[in-house]
Image: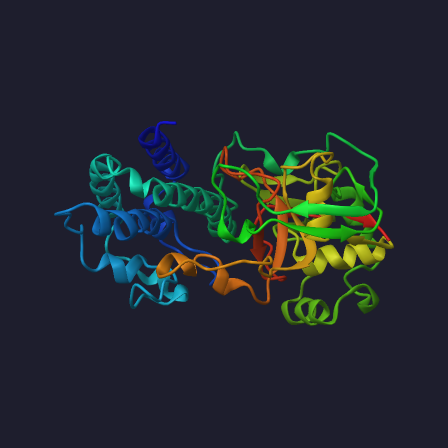
Length: 380
């Protein structure tokens, strides 16, 4: 494995994602959960500067002393930072300066990589940037999607038209199954430690819910009948006037959706996406089915067709037995978020190459739906 080559490849991909943006696209933050592209570019660079270069490269001088405050995300051990909701107010430094920052840090990483003792930390940084690439794509879509002209990000991207390649249900027999990462490659601490779980026999769909199936739920009063909804989900729906998946618009009596290639007709056979956990749970209830637990999902993963969308599970994001946070700022990476969030499994069309595995545990608050997520059903 050539770690420098891997590092440079991931760094270049982040910039390729941003290459088609206009300068004005780098700045906005139309919602708290969205970060501006400029911030992603800088924060992923700050991670390498703060955790590797300032600690492990003798004589290294930081690019700009203000950047630690501006582009630290949530690492309290490191010091003060801007509020998450204020990231869009950081108009200075400009976009050009952020790209210079990236070049500066990259120019020092080859020397730092001569120290083999930091390679594991560099791998964390690479995977961290891959996480931000997926967030970056979702954030770009949200930012452009707030524009009433429905601008095109890339005509060649047709993710929202992806269809299922498989169908039917898969039976998983009852028994004791092992869950969690087991191998010699990279994994996040939240995938450890590997442990046993007992599962009853269940049948899980080998396809994701389609647009046509979801429209049937909508037309049957799915968004107006509280009986299908968890109480918090019903309150969320009413407080926010939710009546369709994110990015759906009814125009002249026809449903359309905003995509990375602009406003398009909805393909009824395509996989429904941009669904909250609340919506996924309500749809499952309407169908007389349920969502899988994350342990059921992992036990079935070898037989499932997965990878097009992140898939909501009905499992709260909690530590595995024996989970232990690392000391210092690195320990803040996952552990402190293990509350009030739900686990998603799999990967999505926006997931970076080489960044998916069956044990990966993604997690978001139940109302969040700007990621490329979807619904897989399990028979009750």
